[in-house]
Length: 336
Image 1 (cartoon, one colour):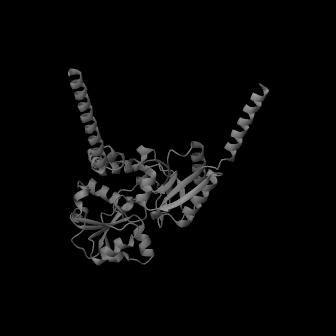
Image 2 (cartoon, helix red, strand yellow):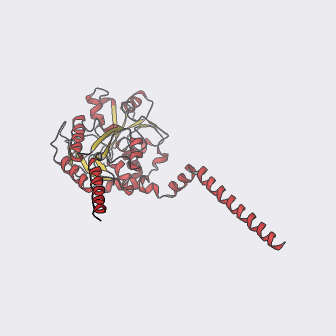
Image 3 (tube, rainbow, N blue to C red):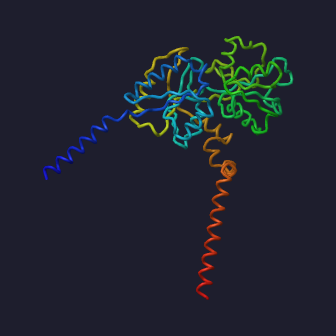
């Protein structure tokens, strides 16, 4: 009996030592490559260091990815933390994505009202003066799911009673090559360009364009935001997490980020208290959960997986035929 107890104790010690010897969990932190220039590099680097300290002794793997890849990582729960626009995070909230904190900047006094779009046209376009004048024109934008560089503008068009899917004659998307949007407008290759709020001011500062070369459509007068914008304003870029992060770890990360001192141009992490505008935008454009549970989404999945579906149906049909033949054979055998 004593030998048996000693054996049990040895096994328990072995298991405990192995648990202690296990490598700490590695967390993945995916950052939207379009994060600059809106969020200063110093601010992003400070954020990375804060998260590293908060998750220690676990390791932190940081990856910069473009929006389409980031969307896949969030949707498939292949990243624990991420920085992207509020719209990107809210699109996946039904799959567990959580908006934890929102960036605050000197450009906007209210973190609930920081992100938006700006319609730009060439200064000499006397034929374009309102959103209705943009109908059937050629557009240049960032990406089909980019928030400030496209979606916020589409939301404004939808709010004016138009169908965003058929509003423009054509739309050229440039991804991270955002200066090309401005160049296309100046060169006459596009009638209208869509920029996120504050990108124009950055381009002017970099001498890409001067404001007298352009005209701005549907400008909003908002004393809380110093950048030119043509749309409603939404929460700023956000720090998000997936359900893979334990509550204690997420609490430590959030506390560390909130405690960060303003850096760069005065950026710091804060809390957005109202995402209603973002959710209404996604609903009007049928994105996120509003897309996943729509008839359109259903038929898109049917088309996407048509070969698998046909294969399953064919296998089921063969099984039925086989069962019928076997039952007939057995019946004939009995009768004979």
